[in-house]
Length: 314
Image (cartoon, rainbow, N blue to C red):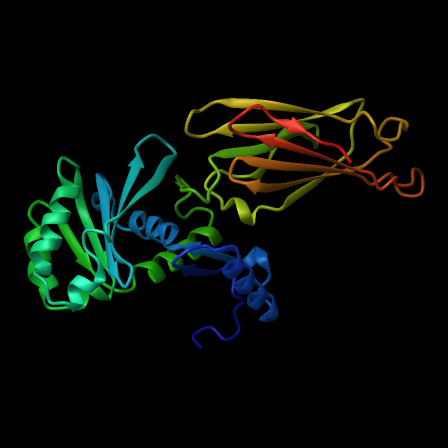
């Protein structure tokens, strides 16, 4: 409505949990609307929370940041930490407190203020949490106003119902504008902890082409690059773990493909992931036009980012 002649550069949708069936359904809807997968991202609430928190002024995330959610699923607490080394590594840890404070307690008119403060103070004990966000319809009731006022002792507390949608907006902007939040790497169970790159020679220089970046949703990665070997019988894939700062090289042999003259074979190297720690590298023999017809042979290797890797060919 505001920008009728502009193109949607990035659409970020946030859902309670990134279940594959839900993600696939939303992406199929996006395609039907003309928004292909490269312009659409589906985040869980954790990812939206991370983007929201670090998009605020630095004083609000200088220490740990806490998030309390209270809805039909009960009470949950998510602690956010920011590693102060550059790049800033943002991580979260969630505790399910529904067994202590279920939503039924609110409906049964129990002493909900006491229950929440006792639970919150126990969780926050000896933690350097100076900013707290609370969201969920359980906090809309009158009891929450007084409880949150008491929780403000030495902390800043914010209450609202749009944290996740605002986080999705911040993420859309950051994913579109490379300068936004470029110093941050966001990590959770759905995101990579390694940069995956391939070493190439282009324009008289050696380049490391990054095919997958740490902090990216592993299920969204599907990248490819075409290469022409120059007296090479192998290629090198490198993974650099941003947590351990360790770098490993994975050598992929090109033996088994058709023998041709030098620089007469073009391969497509494709990167996907089976899970967060399993990278699938696919090599396809494309030949070299009319000079060297393609054999259409495909070679596939599984690289374990957290253990010894294994291979299979086909």
